Image (cartoon, rainbow, N blue to C red; front, side):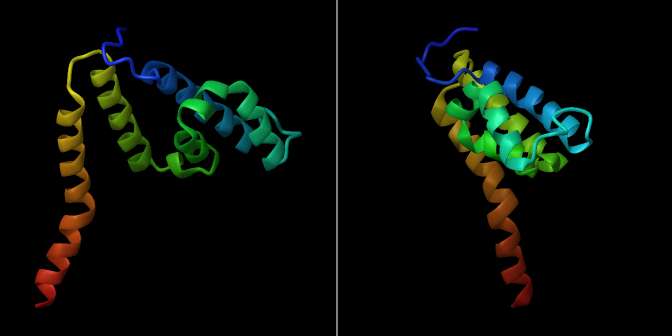
Length: 122
């Protein structure tokens, strides 16, 4: 793992903590671990255990806590974005290449359906 762009966040560490935190949340929800913690106390515990993830990417941290990444599509999209971050981090791709590719994916997902719907309504 190199870091030619001197990026602050290590996507490998983010991915590792994301995967582990998802597992801890699953165990908590199913009463197999942390079963004495209410949601607020569980969040505090996760902030202690996954400090790097919380500081490096609060959005990902919150998406694990609130269950957003329980949805397979959302989790897969997050994994793709982390994969792209790894490519930038390792110097395999430039930031602008990734931005264009991601922009295209998001446009096809969110903008194109709206345009298609408007065209069909005419």
